[in-house]
Image (cartoon, rainbow, N blue to C red; front, side, top):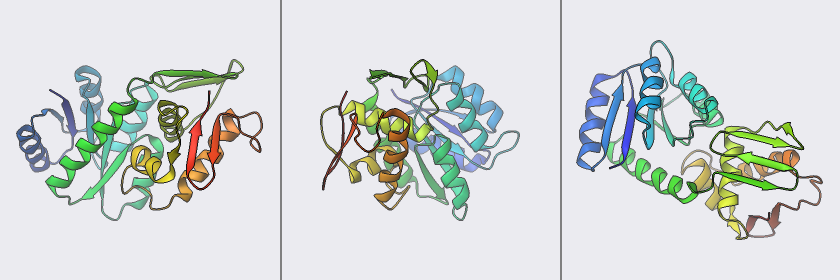
Length: 225
C-alpha cells in the first residue's frame, strides 16, 4: 500500500483528502503545520507528499526547500492559492514536482497523485550516473565535476535523471514537460530548451558541441553516456 503524506492546516481539507485517498486504497498520514510536516516525512517516509503553501510555523515553501536539502526526493504536489503565481514558480524551482491551485476538485488531485507516482516509478531505479568528469547522486541531490561541487537546481536534477533513465533513446520536449514539470506547470516547450541550455553549461565541456545531452533536430533530446 502506497503511503501519502498530507500536510495542510485546514482540517476540512485534510479530512476530505484522507477519506477520498482511503477509498482509492492509499494509506494517508497527516500533519497540520510545516514543522510537524518535516518530522512526519522523515519518520513515515511516504511515497508522495501533498503540501500546502500557507501554513503556520513553517510554510510549504520552507518545508520543500528543507526536505530537498536533506536529499529527500519524494514526489511532491504543492497546494497554492489560485492567484499565487510566484509561489507556484518558486515552489517548482525549490523542488516541487507539480502544483494544484485551491480550491481544487478531489478527482483532479487523485489523478495528479496517480500520474506523479507513475512518473516517479519510471525513474526510481536511477540513483546515480558517472560520465566524463561528472558524478551525480540523484538520491542525495549531490553532484561534482572534476572533484569540485557542481551546483544543480532541483529541476535540473530531475531533468537529467529522466534523460539518464531513457539513455540512448530520444525524448520529446512534450514528454519532458509531462514527466519532469507536470501537466500544467509550464505551457511552453521553450522552457525545456532553456533548462537544457543551462544544464549543458554545467556538465558539457563544449556547449556548442555537446556530447552527453544531444539534440535530435525536430524531435527532442537524448542522453549519451
